[in-house]
Image 1 (spheres, rainbow, N blue to C red):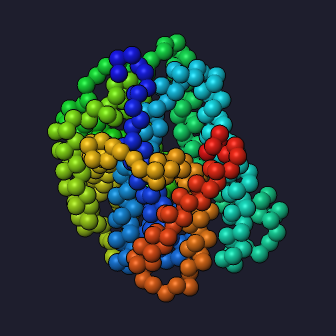
Image 2: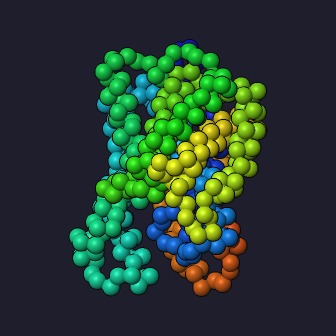
Image 3: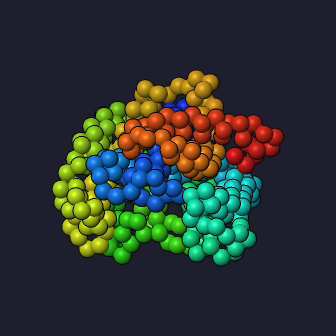
Length: 383
């Protein structure tokens, strides 16, 4: 928009995408619970099996885009909010919305949650004070858990505010009016992002965490890049200007890339559970995987933007409530998923049917509890 104002019509399709993305977060953590490769508070199934491979394929497909998409969407609305509120009010609001949940999670929720879980699973029998001062720091350090995203978003946002202050300009985004990128430009961006990811993963393979903050360093090239793209998109209204032809092509390419995913397993000794050449290091498999991951993720993001704008740009009361609750769902979902999975531990089902059943219970339960929490007086100021 030429005047740099926030779009007058609410972007229902973006709200709906956020609902889908938070559901994918829940599904990812439950998939890890029931056998997929990854780190999570509670894992009921471990080892190499067909179900573990299938669930890992699912989570790795989600990983290509869902958290990067969150960063892009979050960044898209930052410049207009900063323009409207001014620097001081905007920064104060960010510390309230992002800083308070971080503070409460790190100092209270994470240690209590970790302690109770360890006691229930029989992994720890000591006192809470010993856990809090000795055990917790050696396991989770600051205990960010899933709030690594909130921490990263706060850091990225403050960096953008500082950049704006240095420039001393009131602009909607990083750039002026530009057309939506052409397909060759999109593909080139995805390829370059894949190469950068490969280089980073030579030293920091997938699975590596910066222990102090529990940050998945190998994925940060995409997170940083898409946050910046979100800021640029804000100045050009790109999220609402995806050309139909580009959106259709990207959606088709996303489907094609996703169908190629199982072939990546043929490049490693999957039967022995050795995925390390795909995960990083100076291996051609890591380069191929990094390129596939970024090209797939970027195609999915653009395809979803086009598809939801064209087909799901409306909202009923349930979707409206769910969209408002997504941030709260993100914060509280570990507190629901882990007890639910432990409570259903004795239910004898194969991993994939159990994953489907628990997912069907967990998703509405997370949204219901989040909605009840936000109904408490004063909570919406933060959540």
